[in-house]
Length: 485
Image (cartoon, rainbow, N blue to C red; front, side, top):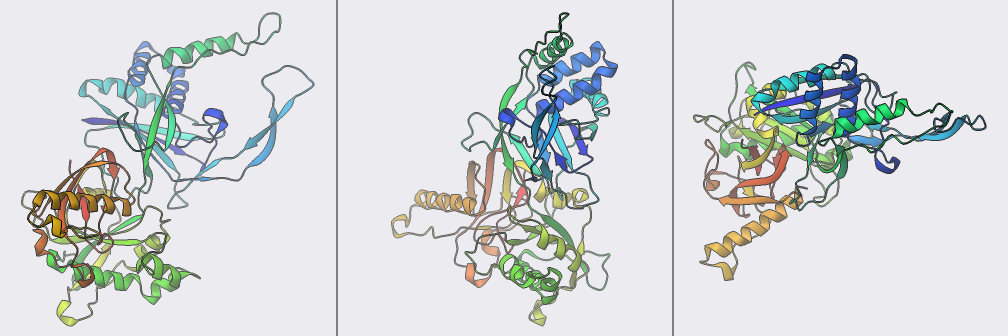
């Protein structure tokens, strides 16, 4: 199924829009976009464009990708009072408190993208909406200058390397609480907005009286949940002597591979590059010391080559990702320092003869996309190490009780990974993805070897953004999940 994507690029990283009760609205609601599209489209209004807007208001609420927000500093200003013609009060106090939009690069402009799934017969409507999007000049207040663009995507692009947060409309049967409520278009939104505009033209009567009653605007309050993106960088494993050639690593070498990358990421050079608190950041984020300390952690995730019937499952790429509460500072530093770094083993017999080459365009890499896309269904590419024990005396010989215990431990692992959305669970000892191996073929580090291992398939109610890693070994290459479909 194709997608209509409307992207709004803001010229300034501050957004002033307000929702119900004057509270800051984030992300900008689909209804706000609908109104901006309508204002842009009215300059070249036709009945065909009107039918496209009636089509759009009948669509399901869109998915939204938006930068991470932060509250801006509030300031008091005075503006003309538009609600009275009395000369006694020409200005009224107004508090301005923008929402700040974060971007990875200061040279970039923040963007918000809205995505609707559309049928093949709806392309003509979508193209008319795209034409209106090109004429958008602002979204939010009049000072929130923005440029709109749209496109129809036959194969929706993965979000690998996209550090924005994903916002999904919640279903009524979802058990997870909504993060926010946004106004979305509904049947009748176009007619109500046109009626409100006509009423505004009659705001001042012939006798000078003012009527501030634009009429009720039709929309639907929709609960949206947030799936945060993790700060992530991707590397390819290339031969040390010939960086143009791949250097595949066997699944049995995950322990050695992760250890070498972890050693490079915790070097004194990295600590100095991170600045004044660099040593502390390396200890907490990279090495995880102490283990129970709050705050972000670095996960080193080898990516088996999968996605093709003849994939061999060998590791040719690695992603480094911070946990959901990470700010990307460590990732940004490692991206520059580890590019071109040759992996050095502790023992000569473990030498891989590989160096790390940064992948500058992760969305173009088909393997990386499988691990960083949005999907409802995820399956383990490396076994999940469950945080506990599934062999109790009372479960001996009873496979059903043992699986029930394993499911309890998996739910615990999901909580540890900060994944709150409910999911259907499937557990297996044998691979669920072609190219991967039986759980007993892997060799985790000694301190993790006693944990029970399972391949896992998770089906969520709503799409979840990758990369995902769960279980006791989620920071060191185990429990790496791949998107399925």
